[in-house]
Length: 412
Image 1 (tube, rainbow, N blue to C red):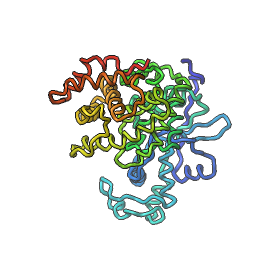
Image 2: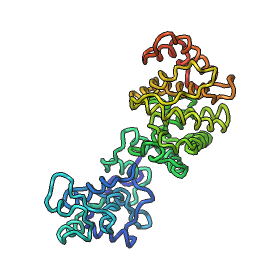
Image 3: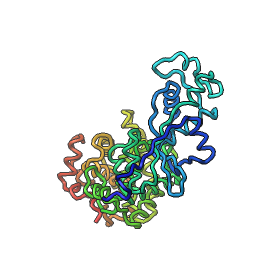
Image 4: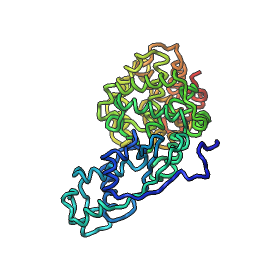
């Protein structure tokens, strides 16, 4: 790709300002915050305390990135949370943690102090701390995001997250959907994990690609469809985006998610979203209501077994499925959600187990609609093999040897 600015002219101008000067520029509008922080997650109090501790000791806290836009305005693009934390401290909303290592007598004596409580010398250490601003002059948007990622080595993003952020229209589409889902109730307190490393975006990107491809395998690591999408940066079709959005909204609306015992991990959220999308496609929007009924039992029981606790209540199986080896299947579901969770084999197996439980608890109004016939075939294979104990290897062997898993997850 040909850069859209003159490579012979430097796009970067370094300047140095003090903390007090930077905060003053934010207050009077000479410097303004970008619409959204560049990092993937909100900072914890501990993170803020560590930053403040570094400033008080005179240690480096990294450069800040400022973009000078065409109208002359200066936008703080990277470093927003660092300045926000320092602003909190100066306003009196954050206190010193003097217990951080290595021990320092002055800091220990100032433990729990606000900015106003500090001795003059420590207040001056904050006010006069030098910040290096790298100012970019009107860098084109196509190059700006890559520049930020290369500059900031502390975003905590895995390689997949970095590729997603750089993936053009597709990345923007994913981020917009996640932002909308926050209004529907997406968050750590209901899901069990936060958005560190763009975890939500990672799940949604995989679901979007899998739904458009009509293949559960497309959500797995190494997926050709996912890699091609990240390379091209092309957004998925609006129909696909809307289908995933409605399924996600339906999942988030379930009262079961307000129960403390119903919590997800990235792999289990991926699996249940894929099951939800396909169930709504097969049986209509009403299919989501049975999910709440299923998750009320399955998620607490899954988590009990993952913690090596005694089994809780029996599953609400329909009489036609009373021989389902639910305990062994739940154990296996946990295993492939924890180890090698995003391999094609694990992704397919979790999806199949999810459908087994959905159908066995009455979530399929018709036995003729795909994929229910294949689910019944898996159930028959499991009951035929029920004479011996269902070890990890035996469950996989039964389902793969029967052939049901060889084509499982291909929606088309």
